[in-house]
Image (cartoon, rainbow, N blue to C red; front, side, top):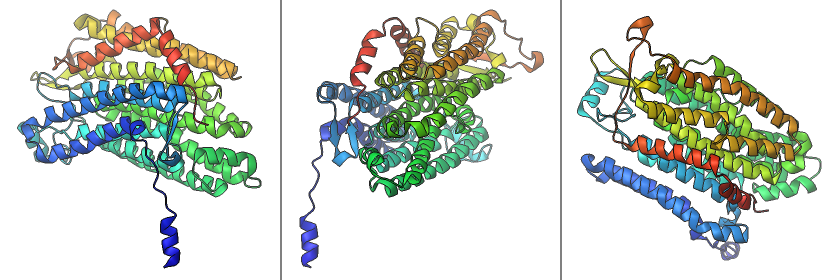
Length: 534
């Protein structure tokens, strides 16, 4: 009994800095409230309440990040929850990117076409093609559960780059992944393709998570701790256990490389991008990549420097093959969403050049690249949601994603085609777009870090990728659309909607131009933030 009392008396409750957790708490708290909304708010008012709550929460998180910025900049960061969460410059900036891009993506998610339908199946549990599914469609049921699911995913994404230990990082990984597995299978049309994509994503994601967790166990066996700073310190003091260290860090990196879609851990990317509801594809492509790169930056810049001669050859090989596979395989794709999927893989390689630079300028470059890429990605997928096939009876069907169906879009909807062309040019890294500044800073960081060869490969891969971006632009503006019925051509139209998607496209396009023409302010901000808590 005395021993129990002594043990109980030795426990000291941690002091929790709630203010520095406010961006995360706002988003996750809104997700919990969203679940209650599903239970208690009448069905007719549920969509409006969920949308208002989600937009308010993400906007509030952006404001909270801005309020914390000056203090974090001056102090260098704050250790929260005994080191489980680290609110420093990179962590806070990535949280702001995730919150802002989630806000933008929610506009696309919420939009409904002139037929009053959104992108999501009216009943996720309905068997595709069944009478029950047809009945739910006729009744006009709406899946408003997507809003709290998105908020939970965004909350996990905001914890992920700020995690100070590997167990917190694993919990964040699962919190962000599980809602995405569900959301990927909720497409209103092409239900079997959507469900297949969700199943592939879930199974491969489960394997990647298991590998990550196995790596955490090995690193704990090596260092006696799961905290990143303790593992980094152990790399210089612990002898005779290099096998545990290298195997553990390799497995942890595999889990993170899977989430960013690096080759050879990329096989889920094209199928999930194509099968998921298009608004979710945009959200996932932008926000998951930002969060995962934030976590990868922290692991690489805290632990890997002591192991650079052991790990850099493998990381270099992954960077080169990722850029090559993404750029080359995209050339032969005929589906617009799959083209953007392989484009995303190529961009993963470009961003990784800044990561493996192991130089402070690399942190700056990665954060700026994530902003530029996220804006163009959400904008591009938002455009895709508006280009639809039309059935024989005039019914608006799913997205027209075959490349041939985009011929002549510039004549039917010049402003929409111009916006899509702008996003493609930003992906290609053409001057006066944010993508050019992003690639320039990433490759410059690689040169500064002694990885000039990676920068050269990146430039060559960018030149190759320019072909399939320009091909789409030529198709939209300089190719006449096929007549309906000719060679199986379907009728294609640009649908009218409530306008949320148009707002998202306009904001993304304007920001892409502003960051391309006036990047210095944002780059200075990224440079000030490019310091991890030691």
